[in-house]
Length: 152
Image (cartoon, rainbow, N blue to C red):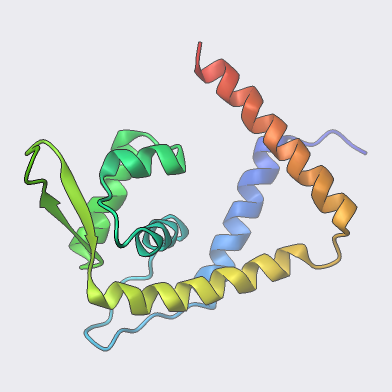
């Protein structure tokens, strides 16, 4: 096999997934037409739906998605601007803001979740269980390698 650059290939796959997502995912909501949520926004929405009975803060999302504070902050600002979420000051600690889903967000989430599941099925076509297992082992090792240098 010729030498390939891993970072380039990962980025290339991510771009193809995102292109497919945008081409095949037109979102309209009964309230208004909104901009298309990014895959990261849909992952955040999914997390918030699964934790609707819990108090969720920006710091929680930073840990769950392994993203920097500024990155999550920017994503949340866009989501708030688009009316997907609201941020409410915590009653016990005014430095913290709870993240709450808007009602229309649930509708958007269901549309986006179905599309993500479709993309997952496309990605897994013609891949054996053994190949998938090796892929997960390799991917997890790469993540560990990066985490070990980030902790230094």
